Image 1 (spheres, rainbow, N blue to C red):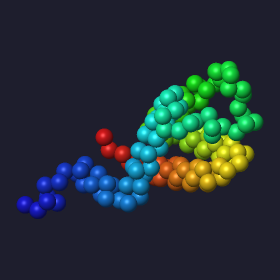
Image 2 (cartoon, rainbow, N blue to C red; image 1 turned 90 degrees about the vertical axis):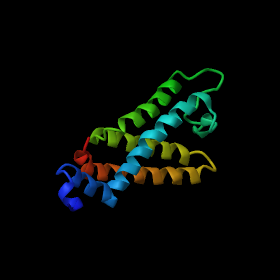
Image 3 (cartoon, rainbow, N blue to C red; image 1 turned 60 degrees about the vertical axis):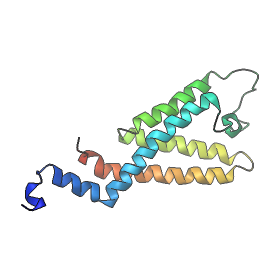
Image 4 (tube, helix red, strand yellow; image 1 turned 120 degrees about the horizontal axis):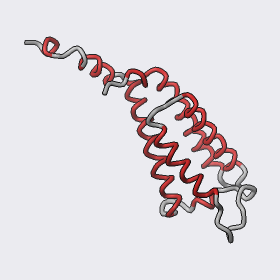
Amino acid sequence: MSPAATSTPSTTPRRALLADPGYQAFVILRTAFTVAPILFGLDKFANLLVDWPAYLAPWIQRPRSRQRPDRHVRRGCDRDRGRRRCVPRASLRRLVGGLLAGIIVNLLTIPDYFDIALRDFGLLLAAIALARLAERYHGKRSH
């Protein structure tokens, strides 16, 4: 018997989808934009990877002597952004794009952080690409 004759109808489209380079790019970007915000959001509590307050523009920072109540909200938003990436919806894609654009504006107002703003611009482009790929592939996922 040939392999094509033994394949069930539901596995053949799935294999074809997994072989599609566009779908592979979608899965890679979706995974990265799910895991990274969760990990970095958790790190904002511990400051193990990066000194996160140093990346906040002076016009945004308040005196460090008081704990900012919104700091925990920002950290939670990063984790939520990662969890919501699992289910890409149009409004959430716009939210992620807006957050990245805000981060870029923040970094452009800090001297010597232009390279990081450029990196985040690349992330913004990747988020836009993920949104476009999600329009094509998100409904095709097989469970």
